[in-house]
Image (cartoon, rainbow, N blue to C red; front, side):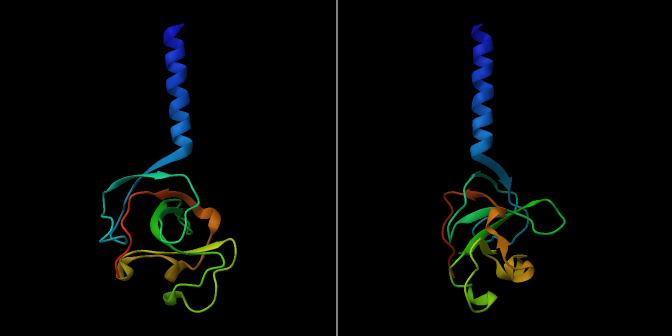
Length: 128
Protein backbone atom coordinates (compact mmCIF):
# COMPACT_ATOMS: atom_id res chain seq x y z
CA UNK A 1 0.00 0.00 0.00
CA UNK A 2 2.80 2.43 0.92
CA UNK A 3 4.67 1.78 -2.33
CA UNK A 4 1.49 2.29 -4.37
CA UNK A 5 0.86 5.63 -2.65
CA UNK A 6 4.47 6.65 -3.25
CA UNK A 7 4.22 5.80 -6.95
CA UNK A 8 0.87 7.60 -7.25
CA UNK A 9 2.33 10.66 -5.54
CA UNK A 10 5.34 10.66 -7.85
CA UNK A 11 3.15 10.35 -10.93
CA UNK A 12 0.90 13.17 -9.71
CA UNK A 13 3.94 15.39 -9.11
CA UNK A 14 5.31 14.66 -12.59
CA UNK A 15 1.95 15.44 -14.21
CA UNK A 16 1.78 18.71 -12.25
CA UNK A 17 5.33 19.66 -13.30
CA UNK A 18 4.63 18.84 -16.96
CA UNK A 19 1.56 21.08 -16.93
CA UNK A 20 3.47 23.98 -15.33
CA UNK A 21 6.86 23.77 -17.06
CA UNK A 22 8.46 22.81 -20.35
CA UNK A 23 12.14 22.06 -20.98
CA UNK A 24 13.60 23.55 -24.16
CA UNK A 25 16.97 23.52 -25.87
CA UNK A 26 18.11 26.64 -27.70
CA UNK A 27 18.73 25.86 -31.37
CA UNK A 28 20.75 28.27 -33.51
CA UNK A 29 22.18 31.71 -32.86
CA UNK A 30 19.05 33.88 -33.10
CA UNK A 31 19.08 34.73 -29.37
CA UNK A 32 22.81 35.44 -28.99
CA UNK A 33 24.37 37.02 -27.04
CA UNK A 34 21.64 36.39 -24.44
CA UNK A 35 21.21 32.66 -25.05
CA UNK A 36 23.45 30.23 -26.90
CA UNK A 37 22.86 27.16 -29.06
CA UNK A 38 22.63 24.03 -26.94
CA UNK A 39 21.56 25.79 -23.74
CA UNK A 40 18.87 23.85 -21.87
CA UNK A 41 16.22 26.00 -20.23
CA UNK A 42 13.21 25.46 -18.03
CA UNK A 43 10.23 27.56 -19.05
CA UNK A 44 7.04 28.21 -17.08
CA UNK A 45 3.79 27.81 -18.99
CA UNK A 46 2.39 31.35 -19.04
CA UNK A 47 1.39 34.06 -21.51
CA UNK A 48 4.36 36.39 -20.98
CA UNK A 49 4.75 40.15 -21.19
CA UNK A 50 6.70 42.50 -23.42
CA UNK A 51 10.43 41.99 -22.89
CA UNK A 52 10.11 38.37 -21.73
CA UNK A 53 11.94 35.59 -23.53
CA UNK A 54 9.24 33.18 -24.59
CA UNK A 55 8.77 29.81 -26.23
CA UNK A 56 6.38 30.04 -29.19
CA UNK A 57 4.99 27.58 -31.68
CA UNK A 58 6.69 27.86 -35.06
CA UNK A 59 4.19 29.49 -37.45
CA UNK A 60 5.50 27.46 -40.41
CA UNK A 61 4.85 23.87 -41.39
CA UNK A 62 7.59 22.74 -38.99
CA UNK A 63 5.91 21.91 -35.65
CA UNK A 64 8.99 22.90 -33.63
CA UNK A 65 9.17 25.50 -30.89
CA UNK A 66 11.07 28.78 -31.16
CA UNK A 67 12.76 30.81 -28.42
CA UNK A 68 12.33 34.57 -29.03
CA UNK A 69 11.90 37.82 -27.14
CA UNK A 70 8.32 39.08 -26.86
CA UNK A 71 8.72 42.50 -28.50
CA UNK A 72 5.11 43.73 -28.31
CA UNK A 73 1.67 42.52 -27.26
CA UNK A 74 -1.80 43.46 -28.44
CA UNK A 75 -2.51 47.20 -28.11
CA UNK A 76 1.19 48.13 -27.89
CA UNK A 77 3.17 49.97 -30.58
CA UNK A 78 4.81 47.80 -33.21
CA UNK A 79 8.59 47.57 -32.85
CA UNK A 80 10.15 50.11 -35.25
CA UNK A 81 11.64 47.33 -37.41
CA UNK A 82 8.10 46.11 -38.13
CA UNK A 83 6.59 49.46 -39.13
CA UNK A 84 4.14 51.91 -37.64
CA UNK A 85 0.92 51.33 -35.78
CA UNK A 86 -0.24 49.10 -32.98
CA UNK A 87 -0.18 45.35 -32.57
CA UNK A 88 -3.80 44.19 -32.90
CA UNK A 89 -5.42 42.71 -29.79
CA UNK A 90 -4.83 38.97 -29.61
CA UNK A 91 -1.54 39.18 -31.52
CA UNK A 92 2.14 39.48 -30.60
CA UNK A 93 5.45 40.42 -32.21
CA UNK A 94 8.55 38.35 -31.44
CA UNK A 95 12.16 39.20 -32.29
CA UNK A 96 15.46 37.42 -31.85
CA UNK A 97 18.21 39.21 -29.92
CA UNK A 98 20.56 38.61 -32.89
CA UNK A 99 18.67 40.53 -35.61
CA UNK A 100 20.99 39.52 -38.45
CA UNK A 101 20.55 35.80 -37.79
CA UNK A 102 16.96 35.46 -36.57
CA UNK A 103 13.79 34.27 -38.28
CA UNK A 104 11.14 36.19 -36.38
CA UNK A 105 8.22 38.59 -36.86
CA UNK A 106 10.27 40.52 -39.42
CA UNK A 107 10.01 37.42 -41.63
CA UNK A 108 6.77 35.67 -40.69
CA UNK A 109 4.74 38.57 -39.31
CA UNK A 110 2.74 38.78 -36.13
CA UNK A 111 1.70 35.64 -34.27
CA UNK A 112 -1.53 34.86 -32.45
CA UNK A 113 -1.00 35.45 -28.72
CA UNK A 114 -2.10 31.84 -28.21
CA UNK A 115 1.13 30.69 -29.89
CA UNK A 116 3.06 31.47 -26.68
CA UNK A 117 3.77 28.17 -24.93
CA UNK A 118 5.91 29.31 -22.00
CA UNK A 119 8.08 32.06 -20.50
CA UNK A 120 11.75 31.56 -19.72
CA UNK A 121 12.70 33.05 -16.37
CA UNK A 122 16.00 34.56 -15.23
CA UNK A 123 17.08 35.90 -18.60
CA UNK A 124 18.85 39.25 -18.75
CA UNK A 125 17.17 42.07 -20.68
CA UNK A 126 18.34 42.67 -24.23
CA UNK A 127 21.11 45.24 -24.49
CA UNK A 128 21.06 47.38 -27.65
